[in-house]
Image 1 (cartoon, rainbow, N blue to C red):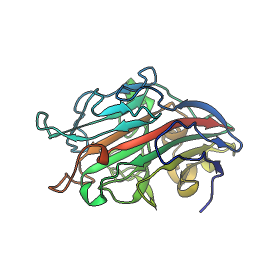
Image 2 (image 1 turned 30 degrees about the horizontal axis):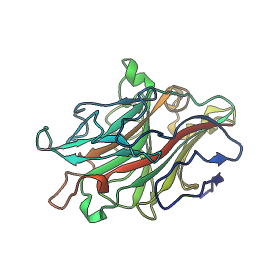
Image 3 (image 1 turned 45 degrees about the horizontal axis):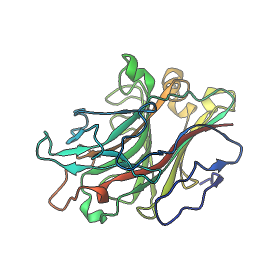
Image 4 (image 1 turned 30 degrees about the vertical axis):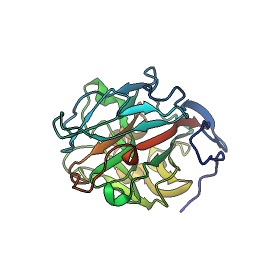
Length: 284
């Protein structure tokens, strides 16, 4: 394992404003620190707030452009909150943001993307079917491209309240292919608790050779996954992950093929939410 040097700000016990951290050797390129009054929507200059049922992965939720599901906390954080709702198909509503901002990792540089995230305080035994995620898709998907050829990098996913974080690459073709779809190429790490943790991905294009370029995942500075060009061993597929425009997604899904559906113990509301302090990109 490797350690990524991150200078983290002091985190107060109650929600309050904090900026993305200084990271040695990097300059901040873009960030959203989710300022604004409580019970308001996030900045729609930065984010598309998804409204509707996406019908993917056998998930139950209907996403809503509503402060009930997607809101500013008033303390410079974003809260994505799943709620039981018998009025919608699937019985659940939730929140999902997709960034209007796109970025492309630059040649001969390292590009870093990061978010600070915590989960709601409901006991993990009440989170069956709850599926929070911080992830990236290739922007080609918005321009008549397909999945998984567009490329997908899941920076952090966790399911069913389990204190395990997953970092996964999806690519190439479905089923099978270079990334073994639908499973993808995944790493995992234990999460100490449901409190604030920093999730980071780094694209390293400093080697001058695509086969030795890397994409590396970290939680709180500890590496838990890495892929390199030679592992993918296909320039076009590697290009979708590291040479092409990318955008962020923050969401809390409910149910689906991976976590399974909620059960009688599953609770909704703020105790089941994902809360985000900031999303940021940096470059050397």
